[in-house]
Image (cartoon, rainbow, N blue to C red):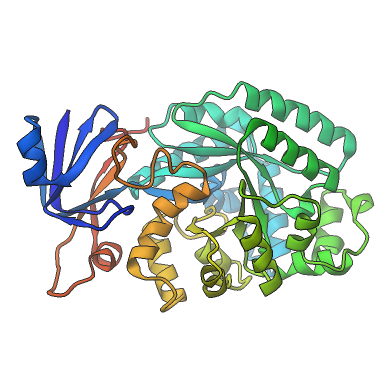
Length: 416
């Protein structure tokens, strides 16, 4: 048992505590309070961090760590060009992904896990397409949820994929991670496959995450089956025979008509959600994960964060992958969202988007995201070199804080 103290303890789930501290026993938080209070009750070793704040480990609600080495793969595979559109980018990702060896993928995941820890991310909502890589996560000091990705249109292949997925989920054991399902996107799965995955997730009581309304191309495709998804993406992956009839709807409304949106559903991006779509998500209790730097890099627009927040939709932050972002740092993401949406989020809300709100988005808030008794002792020590009078503590942490220490399950972690 140890006592950790700092100038500020920032639980996220409750107001900051000046002169705060917490008691950690093994991998769990036992109690929080002021240093004076806890010292009077516990005769245990003290680790004090003056001039610092202790905050929860950051939670990256949306990652694809398989793609961490994407920038170097583009060069090595001779596919280093600048995509002109979102669909061009998707096709580039597919081309590169097809050329990779198992060893290249494994090294990429290991690097992604290392980068996460190095930047203070202790939990992730990871999308995993190659389940042979699962063992890499099981031995890592991070926690969170691993969403097994599913996509496809061919009926026979979808049935086979569903059977394999059911077996893999039934035997899931992976360190501190829990399982989930990720139907990739509305346009990359058949309607029947979508339905089957939803029923499977409900039967196993696990959450689903889906990419939704990321690009204008998706909107065009769902309205009248036209645009670059129909003209370029489907032919590239030999899905021409599966182009659906015009829906004259948005992808969100199409999902809703099929009963595929509920409180266990989390949508990623939401850039092109309409006001009517947003009302649907609110009514169904759907969470939206914002990835603003990824959207900026792919030039697809910005999610209507003000509207989503006004409606009371649960929001969180993710970085997506290094295929569409310049870093996996949630510090970079928090600073960007503060600039991209001036006046929409308070500094405390921004910090929550990358901690407790993100943990809720991946259904892991019973374990991580805040400093509360019973939760995993995942926390960061952030050095605060300058705190002017009347400062906003959360703003100082986000804008000027220097990451000094990272702890997962009560220990300083390492990845071989």
